Image (cartoon, rainbow, N blue to C red; front, top):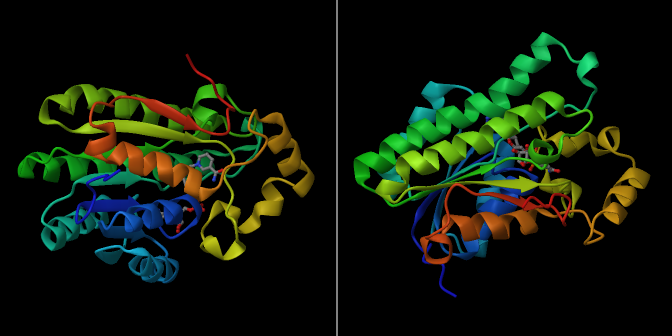
Length: 266
Ligand SMILES: NC(=O)c1ccc[n+]([C@@H]2O[C@H](COP(=O)([O-])OP(=O)(O)OC[C@H]3O[C@@H](n4cnc5c(N)ncnc54)[C@H](O)[C@@H]3O)[C@@H](O)[C@H]2O)c1
């Protein structure tokens, strides 16, 4: 099926690593024009090179700290001017440091708020301005987490912020549906790269062993209905589907778990 994403202008934040990398490569296969916004330029450039080989029409890497509104505005303006607008935004940047709430500090809360929530406000606000100016019937997809739906030990602050992201997408879906702009959230469960070089130096997964032992990964997989942890490609398929007006043109305000059946919300 033609997803009608060829030459469409898409922005992927945090596209240098793991899930974001998978999403960039997913859009590349559809021939999109991709703006890859990542704080890690080296890793982003490697992914951009691969994306061109996989079929992307064009890729521009813009080194961006998405917690900084001025940098985000400049990145979105670059996508608008180089590719004649923005058709799809994927808010993929997110981060957590697993620990019990009583072990967390106010400094950590501020860092989590900036990376998981303020970044989303910055990018979504800046892109909506451009979509409305250009009268684009566009899509915004935010990477949330099943921790926002289930409640997870060691992810209290992160899970609460991702629940905020779900709510933001629903409200914006209601505000902007009349302009043909769709907003959705995708919730991964545990999603790990196929290969260690698929993660950048800032990735949560550089210290995979500190997050979960191999035994715990096995236990997680066995507890899931599909008996396997997620891979970046699993998430990319869902995000590309939601970003396409051809496949998801009547889907907005939804929170979709892509987590091997971990969450089943009616
Ligand atoms: N991997 C999982 O198991 C999992 C589970 C649930 C939800 N998620 C969510 O999915 C998304 C992607 O997760 P991942 O595992 O691929 O992450 P990751 O840590 O592997 O990659 C994050 C990317 O974002 C970039 N980045 C970090 N801070 C940035 C900033 N301030 N500005 C710009 N770029 C920045 C990093 O350089 C990196 O390329 C996140 O929103 C995460 O919360 C992931």
